[in-house]
Image (cartoon, rainbow, N blue to C red):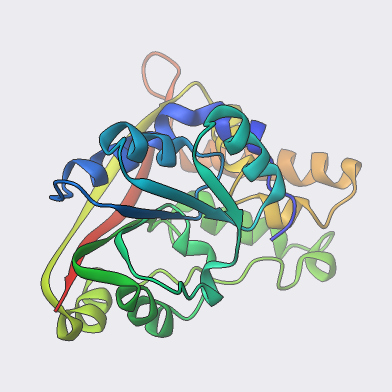
Length: 256
């Protein structure tokens, strides 16, 4: 995927890091020796892993050169490598395979998840968090705008449907291969200053594939139309702010 902008992504670093902290809090590993952060982005989650296990050999993997440049700048001493999660096949297993908000960009989860659990060492853990908001108004409305006349042809197929499935899918996929599997969902209610803040939040992630295909003037018109629909969908609170629900799916798996 091209066009990842680390600076834009990090505008909401605290909100993006909180689910990683919540996932980390549930990982029961005393002293993992080898850790990998798949889809590490600018390294915010990788830094948390090093804080928790400073003695471990930690690698961050991402497909974006811009994200990796930010990671190397902000987290010296951690190894960051270019790689594609879909084809990742390590020579040696890891004690912790960690992925925070990345697997929603990788398809074929029925093939991917068994592949990832095989990369986990005995008594190790696969720990994953993914947004599960593809059918929420924020994402439904951006697809609606993309399907409208001015942009329909340019934006056809710009973003595939999210591959993230319900928890039951991941249970059936992983349970036969695991001796322990914990799944949960959390709906983070984010307080946004207005529709513009929602767009800024999504600018670095969900909107990116659509905007990448448009010229600057077209982007402006697209975002104006999207903002109008968001304003209808998200009522303003008494203090003028907007509450943005953001559901996320988590699981922690230990292989047999």
